[in-house]
Amino acid sequence: MGEYRLLLANVDKPGSHKLEVYRKAGGYERLRKALFEMKPDEVVEEVKKSGLRGRGGAGFPTGVKWGFVPKTDLPKYLICNADEGEPGTFKDRVIIEKDPHLLLEGIAISAYAIGAHEAFIYIRGEYEYGARILESAIREAEEAGILGDNALGSGYRIKIVVHRGAGAYVCGEETALINSLEGRRGHPRLRPPFPASKGVYQCPTIVNNVETLASVPFIVEKGGDWYASLGTEKSKGTKLFSISGHIKRPGVYELILGTPFDVLLNELAGGVRDGRKLKAVIPGGSSTPMLTAEEVEGMTLDYENIQARGSQLGSGAVIVMDDSTNIVKVVWRLAKFYAHESCGQCTPCREGTRWMVQILDRIVRGEGRMEDLDVLLDFESIMAGNCLCPLGDAALGPLISGITKFRSEFEAQIKSGRCLV
Ligand SMILES: Cc1cc2nc3c(=O)[nH]c(=O)nc-3n(C[C@H](O)[C@H](O)[C@H](O)COP(=O)(O)O)c2cc1C
Ligand code: SF4
Image (cartoon, rainbow, N blue to C red; front, side, top):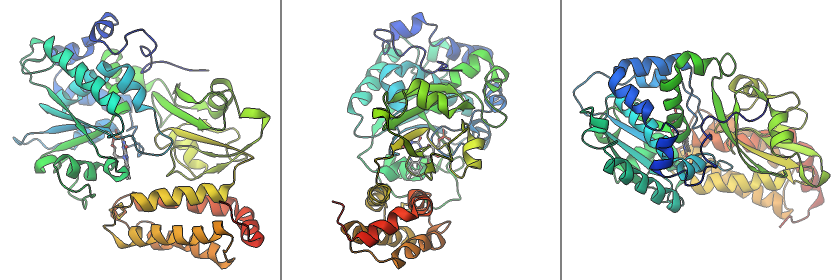
């Protein structure tokens, strides 16, 4: 049970980003099938059957989300979330840069399924190269008549526009993204209403991650049942994992959900580097609680198994830490990230993330007090569930898990009075 390349099948081919290469591998035939042989509702049905869950982090069933789009005459919009801001996550980038037409085909099919004629790709500002690749792929597809006013001669109009972000992590949150796309400040919106009923320009809008949308062509081609035959009971299909940290071969690997973590860590990523021992793993991006080496023993890479161990699959960004890692510094560094990225709109997140950093600063400087640890743990009761968007909760992930699981390290740091920087 090793790699299983579905989304990554084309990425190593020379010129994989070009339309000609994509078409040779059967590209855009799935769009043709959807437009000519399927009604939009049938596409939604197949995606529901497939069990595909959103790959942006929350894992919400994609077909169910599409089903929330109301039947109205208002225009509908599809947004591809290519903000990829979660620390440790770099999987969408591979699709964007190496197989942009797969993403465009997925977007076009999904737009058709929800009745949208316009789709946006909201891409993080730092992905300059990726944005240019996408723009030229869209041009190629429009010139070939695949996208545009009369997609593949079907009479269905599909326009895809690339929109660049400006470097704010919170703009990956779907309602902040919508505000930013509309030219407003990138602040998350209060929900309800959810974007499916009132999103861009107050119209029904579906926001999906790059990897989610890139999975759709395979569901149309091979059927929802086929896709659902891969994986576990609650985790269907394949998933991209970006693995980084203290390993020999960092990179992006595609696995069938339910594959043992050991396969990713040792067979594919080459194991912990320099003969050191595994200390901790952040399994799904920096917002997901870290797990100890003991806790990942026997773990399988799927939503339910990681959740049963007290963390989440998240975006599939696995960060591996060996026994040279100072967990106090990890928690401090990540707390600084969340404090910097908090949009400041709601008090528990704005104040909580800042106070976290101030207390951790003191501990790192060697001026901490033992009672600081319980004060830090108390942030959970202040922030969890009390913030307007999930960023506030996300900031708690590394803090609470780090202190709870590695408390003795924090205590030793406080006792030592040593400055760590
Ligand atoms: C602070 C924050 C940042 C996020 N960043 C991203 C991101 O970079 N990419 C992404 O796809 N989803 C991100 N999300 C999740 C989105 O809000 C949304 O759930 C997702 O785009 C839905 O797509 P999916 O159902 O295909 O996963 C973020 C959420 C939060 C709270
Ligand atoms: S939780 Fe934080 S990032 Fe989210 S809206 Fe509130 S202040 Fe902004």
